[in-house]
Image (tube, rainbow, N blue to C red; front, top):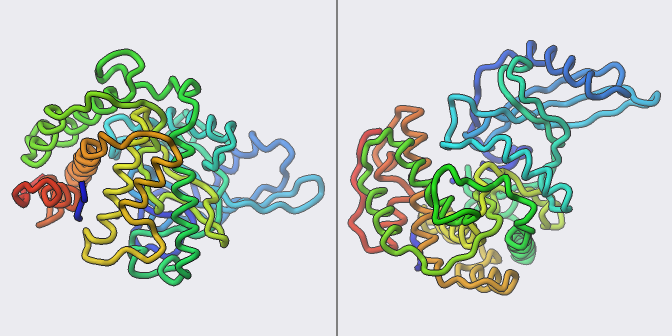
Length: 378
């Protein structure tokens, strides 16, 4: 299925899309967080926190705050950069925010040597800062941002073709490594409460979860394109499928790269599941197309084509792509479900940017030969 038609780094300055801002009083936060950290850094003296800011272009689902810390330790000055990430609370994009699951997964990935962000501390008592949160080390590097899209400007646009190839190949290698991760270490990612075909069937559990998420996101109101998509998915359920770790938001915009073009860290694990590797490959292909042909621009030379991406993933994982069409339709349904939720939260439907008519549904209609979607309100 040739699909025809975007968060970025916690450190990128190239994007101009602001993330969730709860209007926090940073002076009050500084005082509260300083006292909290002093209790977790027994060897630190003269702790001073500064430079609180919201990142630019890091997504809309969780409130994220960057800050700097300086202290004395062993008679020597120390300075570190950190990322503070909050539970979304009432402003949740996902039916199940999976906050604790996200923390548990990142810690398992850290233990296994995978380049996920390193969580240093976590707090589940909302009395400390007004909501549960965790603190991570801040990783510097470069990200192929989506605003402005990396196919039109930015460091990847300016990079030599050979560098872009390195970026793509290493990104694919990291994604394939996710799909080879030991599923036995991840029982906490199971979602039996949403249904599925049987215990431990992460694929069907994730599908049941997203159908429930659609009903929740739309407030029970039918969205014609999503009704058609989920009807098609029900009728064309793969006869055979694999389960296993899926990243959930698989794209190069959720990776930080070093000067050598290799991945330094893989970000954003809140959509992780046990739905299997095709779940990620399909999302990767859909997002890749949407950020290029989907918005009328050419993919950068050096980045793998659709066929190259599929071939390399098969080589790296040894897995079949027979059910890829189904997973790509599912990827579009997931994306449109998130658009539906965002529209409901913001109450700002617009032509071409509403639950029924958006990048995902237009992408899906063009690929499947369906009629172009019409605009509807939230």
